[in-house]
Amino acid sequence: MNYRDIYNKIVKKNSFLCVGLDTDLSKVPEFLLKEDDPVFEFNKRIIDATQQFTVAYKPNTAFYEALGAKGWISLQKTAEYVKKNYPGIFLIADCKRGDIGNTCKMYAKTFFEQMPFDAVTLSPYMGRDSVTPFLEYPDKWAIILALTSNPSASDFQIIQEKETDEYLFEKTLKYGQLWGDENRIMFVAGATQAYKFQQIRKIAKDNFLLVPGVGAQGGSLEDVATFGMNESCGLLVNSSRGIIYASNGEDFAEKAGEKAAEMQEKMKALLEENKKNNSQRKK
Image 1 (tube, rainbow, N blue to C red):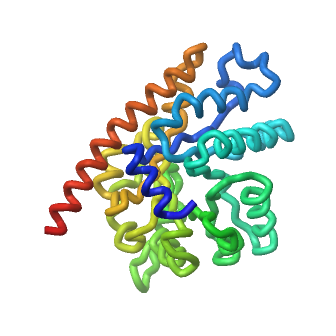
Image 2 (cartoon, rainbow, N blue to C red):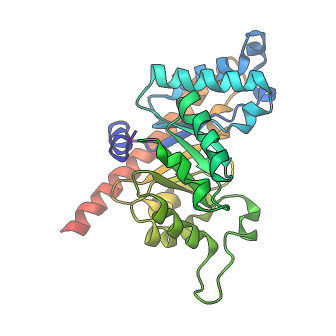
């Protein structure tokens, strides 16, 4: 899936929503536990209820790995279900891998050959060879952690280099530009850091940003759009708990669909405003 495909989907759906499938077995509605694979059954119903409002899904692999072999099967079935039934939706493996080159080649085979993911999230701490193996696959994406939402992000990401006053997250963005262009590289930028998105856009003007932290973590969708949108929208805003756990009853999928619809309506208005602003700037 290329840049234009993602942008066209955003325009068609009036949405830049990514639904995070962080499926915790302890939070799955009790009536589903009788199923052979309750995690997959939960995911399937969430996907069917939200697919018309979202352009991406992002399973966090930790929630599946924690269940051992059964969890990996649930993840595989979930990814295959999305691609079989809704092939135009962008599919992200939120695995935050990062290792030496030959190890990353194996990670790339896992998510791009054994599973039908379009992108993986990556930690760039070990440099170029922890990212480039993922770029050997045409139309697959590396999503590099740059500025995250967690409270201790400041431990490393906003360390400043004395000679240049450059923050570490800015250096990460600059190196990412050298490893691949906006058609292959995205960056993770947390919604709780929206006030720094202007700095991010000075370096990564055209790249898509995957933005976690809206909703349960306190990030503002409006602030993210104000400071982070580019002419092609350039945002995939993730919501996990606020959508998939909107209810723990038999209506859980219906309620998830309602929450996704609410976010899509807000995003539609923000996209229209961005389009208007773009038109005015070109006059």
